[in-house]
Length: 161
Image 1 (cartoon, rainbow, N blue to C red):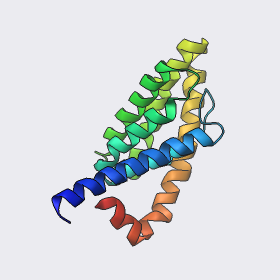
Image 2 (spheres, rainbow, N blue to C red):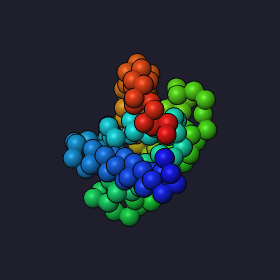
Image 3 (tube, rainbow, N blue to C red):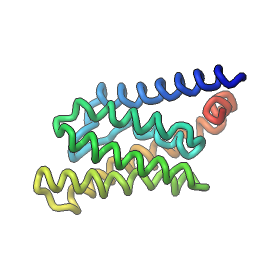
Image 4 (tube, one colour):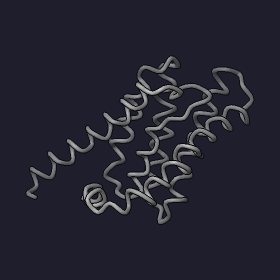
């Protein structure tokens, strides 16, 4: 693939992943608030396999947070939590460890935001955020990648390009 085609391919792939993340978040229920099971967070695991997905996940999260009732604070806090998580995930050697970064960053950052906005105890807000993240990313996401997607050579070739 020549340089121009590779750039176009990367931009298209970034836009597609960001759009899928945003669409899943905006359309599905329980994607915002103290209790959330943000299914699109499974896509953060792409950063474990290839760091080129970092901009896509940050952009997708920002776009997904635009309709949030919490406004700019969610745009900043939620996107920051995802940005930190995906960068750390890209440096991991174990998918199990990588999957814990969005759990931790979202529990701390989004949990603190919810505590500030709703005057909830930090352990409650962080606990609910961590529970949702853990369920979606570690339980569902890692299982999906380890037991299904890693066995699909075409998929793995696609994300490793």
